[in-house]
Each structure stands twice: as structure tokens, then as C-alpha cells.
Amino acid sequence: MNYISLVMGTAILTFIMFFWSARMRDISDNARWVPVLAPDKPTAIPEIPPLISIIVPAHNEEIMIRSCLESVIAQDYADLEIICVNDRSTDRTAEIVAELFQGRSNCRIITINDRPSGWTGKCNALHEGVKYSSGDWLAFLDADSRLHSSALRQCLDEALKRKINLVTLSPKFKLDTFWEKALVPTFAAMAAIIFPLAKVNNPKSPVATANGMFFIISRSAYEKIGGHCNVRDLAVEDIGIGKRIKAAGMGLLFANGKNLLSTRMYSDFKQCMHGWTRILCAAMNYKITTVLRYLAMHVLVSLPSFILAAYLFSQPAMEFWPNFWFLLPLAVGVQMTLIPCLFADQLGAPRKYSVYIILGNLMLVWMFLVMLKKIGFRDALQWRGTTYCYTRYQPKRLDPSQMEISEAPNGFGSFQTVNESETFERPSSSS
Image (cartoon, rainbow, N blue to C red; front, side, top):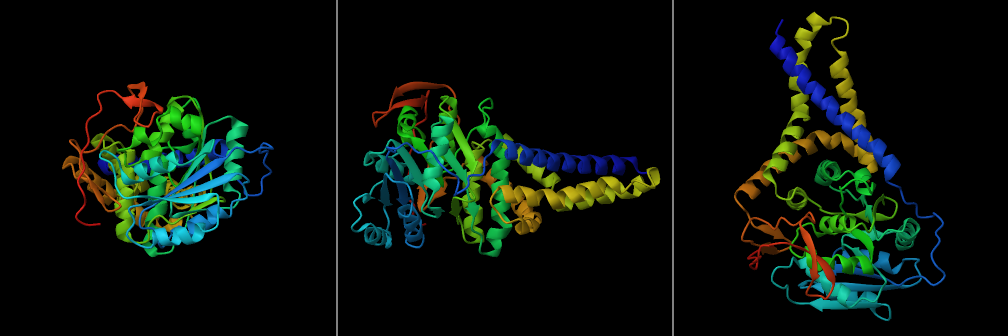
């Protein structure tokens, strides 16, 4: 009997079983800790509702911006102002927004032509939009996302009922092309593994994040953490804001918003790979050890590893357990088939697309290799037509550790990182 093959096969199959058992635990925890918000749920908004300012940044969004803003205009919330920030657009974005806003006293478009040194474009756009806002609550919505007409009312109700300062939503993913169906559910699942939503909502856990596609935050909390000024150079500013809100003890809720929020993040293979590489690399705070850990994990749980493990395991196991040798590979196979369906459903992707997880996982492994190259060679961050270059690979200020209260340039009382590195950027020669 080949004991080495038996041990190796058993070890890999056991690891795969452990991985999917952990995902099943996540599904169970999410059912307990992550509420699914319903559009028709009764709400208890105050008789005099607080003003909500919803801010939408738009950089060359002529394809998406109309449907996005129409979903905001259609909100059933009584006291609302809408601010669209036209951020250095060179297409018809400003023209479309102006047409939509014409004759609406609660809507305004702000145009900015420059990006200050040390700021990402999106953070600067949102920061400028807040300057023109008057709301007691601020809502931030990406131009590629859409809201159900009751979304603001439902989210504010959750915030007031739970006495928390930030509510954010996981979306329903709009997946049209083959590569969207194959990649987005797997990559979104990876983000959920890095930041388990049940732990995000558990006040005893330090895990925290937010979804920049949409979140609503009280102005007082936004100002206390320094707003977007404090996360101005982060590629995942939403995660940074979520972490700062929870670290300050002001309370956040990451709800399942598949009934209230929809998004189409990327439309082809190149966009999916480039966009999610940026997101996951920054979510791991550009730590090579973290990337290596997840790389090893996803190599071991890939279909080729399962086939190899089953091959190594089967023959010696038949000799040792002639009547039961098939139980372990069968159990693992059932897990690999059923659990992705349940996980995809919680993440806002149709269950039928979980069949693509085989390909998605292989592409995720490739992405981790690309991330190692980017971090190791200190490649500059390229995002939405701008190249950001820093004295070190990226500012590692995602976690609000070693923070002290100081006065930010916008006048907000803010968290600031001790001994923060200076940042520099250069204009991109191409998009």
C-alpha cells in the first residue's frame, strides 16, 4: 500500500472539506447576523424626517449615469437632496445630468476639473460633494449602481432603529456576459471571505468594512472620522471608512441589499480582472504574506487539486477501507457542488452561476499571482484613467491603528495616522 499517496490525498481532501465547512458556517452566521432588507417592510421614520444628501460621483459615466440618477430621483423618501459630482468627465456625463436635473430644486450638479495631490479621484469627488450638502445624513452611491425606490427609507429606518451611524448594502449583481458570470461571483465570494459580514455586524468582532457602491452615514459620524479626507489616498476608501466607524464605536450594519441595490461592476474579462485585482489587493493591505496565504488556500481547493487528491487517495483507500473508501471524496464532491450555490445566493448572484466557480477559482489563483507581482515590483496603482505613484507601493493606512485625533484640512475632527508617508502622483498617459 502506498501510504504516502494515502496521506497526501487524505490531507488535501480534508483541507477542501474544512474550507467548504467554513463557508457553510459563514452562510449560517450570515443568516443570523446579516438582515435581508425588504422593500415593502414598514418603517418608522420621524414625522419631520432628517434631510438626506445623496452624492453620486461621475467620471465619464454617460452610459450608466441616467439610470443611476433616475433611481435616486424615484426615491419615496420625503426630504432628499441629490448632488452629482461631474469629476473631470470628457464625455456627455454633464449634459445628461443637467438634462435630468432641469427644473428640480433639490438637485444640483457640481463640476470639478482638478484632482489635488495625494487624493484619489473618487475620494476627492465625494469630498467636494459633501461641501455642497446640507443633510443630517449623507448617502454615497456609485454611478454603476441602482437603488430601489424605498432604499433610502429602509436604510435610514435601520440606522435609527438600531441606533447606529452607518448602514451599507451588499448588492444584486447584474451579470450579462460570460466573463461576468464566471468571475464576479467568485471574486465577490473572496471579498466575503476576507471580511465575513457576520463578523462585520458583530460589535464584539474587530472585522469591519463598508461597500462604496452604496452606504448611508450620519454627518456627525462622518465628520468625527475625518470623512473622505482621512482615506483620501486609499484605493478602497469604503473599507477604510467602515473600519474607522467601527473602531470609533459608532456602529455599522452591513445588510443584504439584493432587494434594494443592484450593480453592474464590469462588463468584460479585462475590466473584471483589473478592477477586482485593485479591490482585493487593497483589501489585503498590500501584504505579500496575506496574498500568499490565500493563494495557497485556493490552489488547494481548486478542481485540479481535488482530482489529484482523489486519484492519490482512491487506490490505497480501496485496499484499506474496501467498503467505505468512497465516502470522503463523495462528501467533498457534494460540498463543492451544493455550498457554492448557497453562498452565491447570499452574495446576490443567481445560484445557477455557481457552476462557473471552477473557472472562477482558477482565475482567482491567477489574480493572486498578478497581485504578488504588483506588490513585489511596486507597480503603480492605475484606476479610472489615473496612475497613482507613491514613495512606497501603496499607503498602508487601511486599518485605523495607531491613530490620534487631529484637525483635518476640511475642519473635521479626524483620525490621523502617526508618521504618515507623503504621497505623490503623476497623470496617466493612457486610460
